[in-house]
Amino acid sequence: REVGGNTDRRRMGSAHVEARELAIRTINSTWKRSRAAVDLLTLYGLVSVSLMLLFYALEGRSVYCILGFAVSCAMGSSYGFLQGAWPFGAVEAVWTLVALQRFWSRWRGRPRFTRLEQP
Image 1 (cartoon, rainbow, N blue to C red):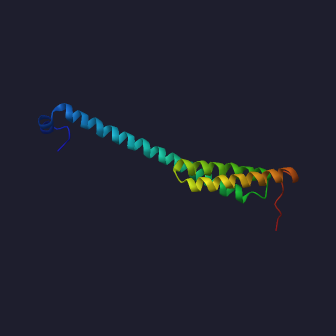
Image 2: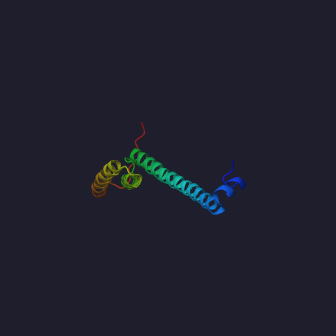
């Protein structure tokens, strides 16, 4: 039987049925919004970890790739804290500091770009 059917309305009263339908609609819309927020958060985490992998692979080409790695580690750290996995966020924060230190030391002492050697 439908929640808003005539039989239910007579038995429960129309005010109760309307309140119940409103509660169901509110729960459903809240659930849909929370699912969308989790999907955006997951996408943010995927992008940050993908950028970490990319910049880590390209670190030998430029000091700017080391800086990109540091920024993507900071993104990964914020993702960890936003998602509720604080140990992941803390470890990524440490990696951010390590990468920034490596960037700074290479920025001061090396050329900005290097060419990959051909085998």
